[in-house]
Image 1 (cartoon, one colour):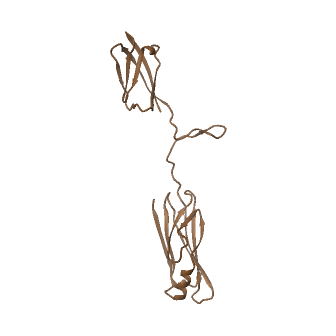
Image 2 (cartoon, one colour):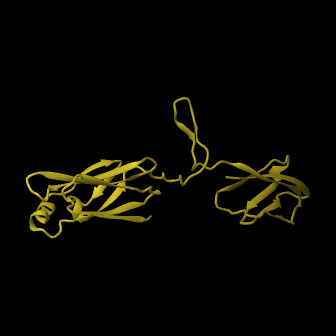
Image 3 (cartoon, rainbow, N blue to C red):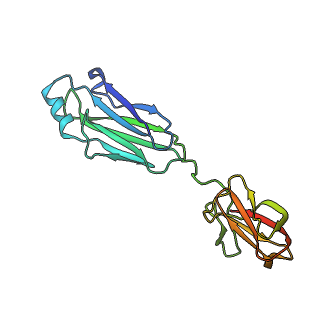
Length: 211
């Protein structure tokens, strides 16, 4: 997150004129603006008193300003309300002219586009007819991970090494052998152990899944 600094001072030579200053600044997501605007009063008591007594009047589009109120030469922070759409902050300062009697207004504007936050979860969403989510980006879906087959003899367990296998609830398996009743399978980290429960040699066929 970056704080961009914008500063502008209008010279005393244009004290008696209504004039505006415009800054275009696009903001990535999370960035803000630290702004300081000032009308030079040339150290003249009357002009400086007016500037000190009249705060900026803000016109804001898709942004907020803090702290408030802000007076001539004081710094404030502009924060977009919603990133992804343009913002605009206009600070208007009204003061007495150098000749007295009438007032003039200076406007300082910072505006631009903003960049929306990229989603942290990427994936697929599906909805039913009632617009309820049936699949979201944080759901875990089971997928086929492997097929293991062979024979195991009573008294001689078989260890099947599986790369990445972790006994943490995200892996599962199914023994589809017709003699599955005579076989015990144990899920380990990195392997599956196949043990025969009955005498003889028995085929095993294991389907491996993970989510």
